[in-house]
Image (tube, rainbow, N blue to C red; front, side, top):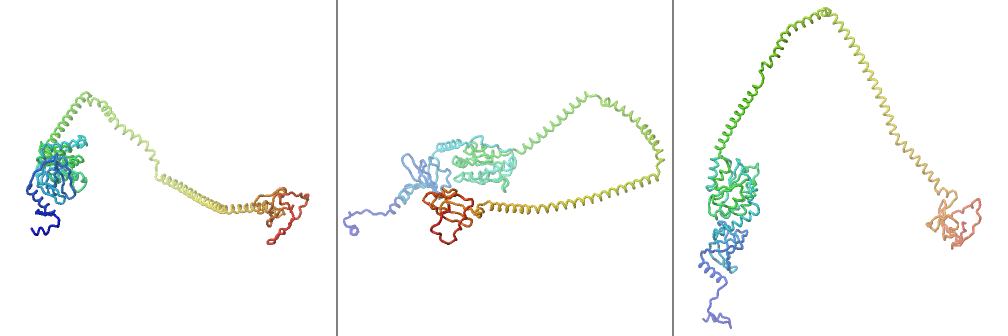
Length: 525
């Protein structure tokens, strides 16, 4: 008591209550909750589902008045038969605990089961209607099943009895090449693996190392609605609807219906029935072929007999062949009888005509004929040789003449440009001389001058005395230079000029360059 008094600050109220730290009070609350609610089953509606990349799942369990935070660890999520979705009413099994970091309590959920078949079926029906509204279940999307596929792809668990039943039934009916894609047929990983398997089979190339199936079978044995729930997932339904390879769904027993059955091209009540739909019975097919062969042979034989009978019936309407050829045979016999004597007579006549001619034929006549023909041939050869020789000489002469003409033409062509240039040069020189002769500079050399107004001559030519008298300054251009002058009456006054003489006065010489102009200069007029 004294120690407590010593530790109590001065002026503070004294108390015997124990002081807890924050961690102590949080641990005490955690132990109380975990002891009182070691394992509980909570019924409620799922809300606010969160699945971060860590693999854990966070969600809420709520009713119309309260909310309980819930969490499932990654290992627990992978074992769940039903994937929790917002709005689903479930019964969650787990334990209550606290989260000291946020001063709240929460439930660690180990398993989840639907609160009732009605709620689960209602959610399934809502999903079915939504997918049907997109046209995924439309009959026109379904493809026909091939009559006898070469390769069959099976999507199922490799360790179950389903694959053995399928292989056994295929072996009994019609052995085919089977490619198995192993998947989980229930649990959290079921939907993703089945969807990847369907898309994987469709992605195989036609000429790849793994044969591309002509038909797919998605199979699973019977089970509860929760066990078959993976085949109701939207990802599986979309993969089945997008499959380019015809697909048979065989999930559960005949009474079980999943959404993949609506999207598949054909539904089988059992996996064994799917194998029966995939291939025909080989023995039945062989029997059918043999029966068809027999029917074809009977039909062919009957048709041939019918044709033969028809031919016989038509032949009765024809006459006897002997009667048709009797006259021709008779004429042939008569001609044959006359042929022998006629040939003998013809030969005798020819021999009679040949006798006199043969007497005239002697070797000397033939030799003379050959000698004459040789002479004719020799003369003809000489004439041909002479003609060829003359033609050759004429051709050579013509070639030489053409060559001489070509040489002359070449020389003229080479000289033509130079002659043209010379003529143009002469014409240019003449035009230049004419330009110099007609130019006013030649006129200046003959004693004339050009008078311009202004000291620089920029105000134009002066052609009259009246204009010159009215101008303040003038510029006079001679043959050897220009001279600036001012009229005597530079203020605009007029001055009479002496009468013109026949001989123009001698022009004054221009002042020398560099010499000052005289202050008083006489008028040029």
